Length: 342
Image (cartoon, rainbow, N blue to C red):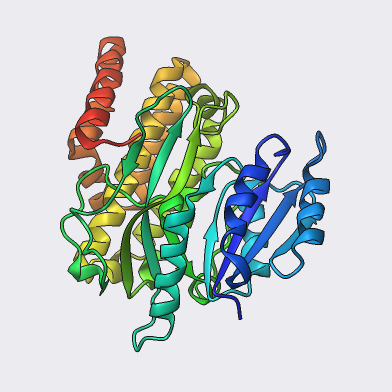
């Protein structure tokens, strides 16, 4: 069995996928790299993937599939994963070799221990186009460093301080056993990927290394604000799915205070992002969708709604009138600076 399976979702990724895959090859025979060609049609993505599989037959595997979106590619990667642990690395991102070696060494050490590791968390770095100073996202003040711990051992999660797909390495069997399946043809499903498995996570480990390099700068990236507004219905679908999941599991989750607090705060951030994008679009249709979203939350679970609505961000997102909407956007910008989220 391989130590780590890494899924690389690719869609027309010819221009940047080599940097990604080359950085992952440094892991050697302990690593299984699963390149998922998600129906690429406009370039040589599939051909390049096959080239890697031919040159590194013991390390690289390729799956070609009809286009299903990022979620479908992650699903395929997970379904084909044989490693003990599982990581997703997007094709325009890469990993740092020194940190990569530390990750693998730590996974090897923990794999033979008495306690079963469910989730490893590492730092990630924003590689933003045109900026020399790199922003590092770390968890030193929230998670115990360099030892196994459970949710109760976490410190208080500040608003806006959450764990993204870039941060996590899950135990493969945990993801399969919890039935994780991401929606197809939908962007922003990475939020579900780092949300739905959490109730099944018992043992965590935080390795304080700057492992994942998250590239920001392509105009067509899904996190570009204009792109997000154009795909707002997909953002809202993910938002509602997170509401449903938290509400449906609330009775179980409230017994684990730190975990529930974290998941509720994460939902608050996602709902705030949905709301501010709908406001910034400025259309009557999208303003109506914002009202529908908050009504949906209220109908699903009044206590969760009250928490989200009464908070500083919930209040800021629901100010009346055009003037209120201007204040909402400015309040969001202030919250970004205070709580350090993007």
